Length: 112
Length: 117
Image 1 (tube, chains in turn orange, red):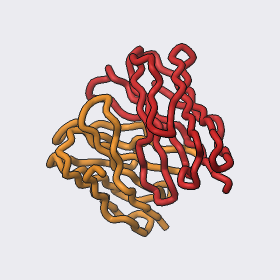
Image 2 (cartoon, helix red, strand yellow):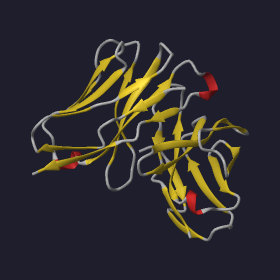
Image 3 (cartoon, rainbow over the protein chains, first blue to last red):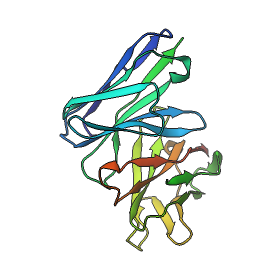
């Protein structure tokens, strides 16, 4: 399995609070991605990174920000969590363009 | 923008039988990659099989094979000799090859496969 660790595994938070999810990889892969998974929607891309400090928005980026200060870490921040952000969040990495994505085990976030 | 469509939300198969999961996609690109991922109840996303669009030969991985019809933009997954452990949600996904730094994976909504003993 690719060395991808997501933390925390589960989190419950209140509406309006900031939340940061962490993705850590030990593969030295260039590309990193954050997806959210919701019933009936499959996986949708939030943000992605193609290098240190190089990030861009995906299709559902509103309400989320990311940072990548090191190759191995990709952080996803919800500045002010809302109930619509209750979801399962997946981090993924890829070594090369066109290569498959390898996924972390996901973080289940509940916003009450 | 690329789209991936999995029109069947659920399917069921008898153990040891064969089942085919359908996927269609829309793209204006000529070179790209297609994938099937499996997500068991553990939530882990597992790569099942990968197809490169420039290859005419259909990809095969043990009991899993694809029927890739480029002109029809169809990419179905065939599971032979179905096993109880095949029960999972399956996602079809597309990734462009010539999109540079913007290369990302676009997923269908998934199909839930159940296997009857």
